[in-house]
Image (cartoon, rainbow, N blue to C red; front, side, top):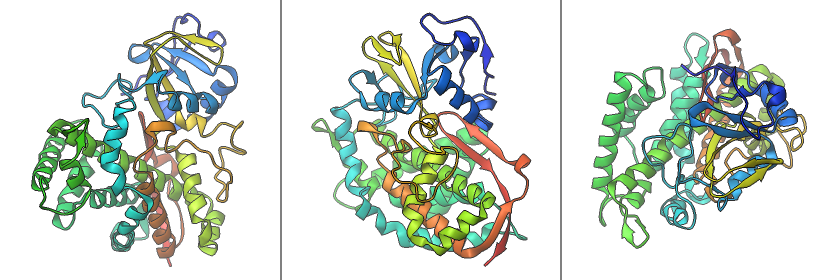
Length: 404
């Protein structure tokens, strides 16, 4: 269970005196369910806050500060981890600084360009059309289940899996992205998934096999040497879990918004050319990756607050994407918002490598859902559930639907 936000003793140099030294915790129920008023107040009154959680860190949530921490990799390093607490497995290329980081990305980039990911549009469209009749039962659907299942299947197909393998992966992902993930079933599913990915990599080592992302990783090189098995698994795991969670969370959030704002749903049906800007806006609004972490490489100052070398700095991407100094009406979805310099895919050298695939999946998922359903509304907002860590997502969103 996540610790609640509490009041404790002050941290030297903190601007939190007026806040009673709030102990910020991105896993707390407040941040999980209803963080927007807290983030707004912190941006305005306490833009740099120290928390003693997870060994101590500084939290920043203003747009300009978050973008600075993302882009100044010379001052804010990823090599001590990007999560609080740090994940036990190294996440490549996310936890390596440039210039070596660019070599890891070079293994992935050719398969994730805008033109390359278009190869999966027909698959994604057929998948949505096949899934929706199964997901809609007795005039009801769980928008989150559809969003997550659709997202992880598209992601796995883009990696190189197909056919019966997608069904096996669907079972494992369903466990790893459900309430059982931290129990025995989750541990077994994780071990079986790693073994399965390892076998897939073995099958693609050398010249034989399909020209897909898995093969690129299996035969990839960095720093003049072949990737070892740990590096290979790390690259795959980051693509799987980063792509699945973020895409599913963005799609689910978009569907929930449209259920609550049927005028926007009608507008998207009537003006399909709005979809690209709408997808960017839904990513901004949802900010599926809501928090990340860096470590200072030297003494720095943010917002007039000194931060010493070697300290953890957590930046609130979701808070930055709702900063009223950058975005007009930030807590509203504006389908044709321009400009939209959101940070939902990051900024700087670690910008999301799979952003084009994610946007394609959200776009197709929305298009097919709106084509299949003439109207829909949330069945019970009180029954909706949420998850919050480095990512923030709706995990249960029951809705009534009327088929088109």
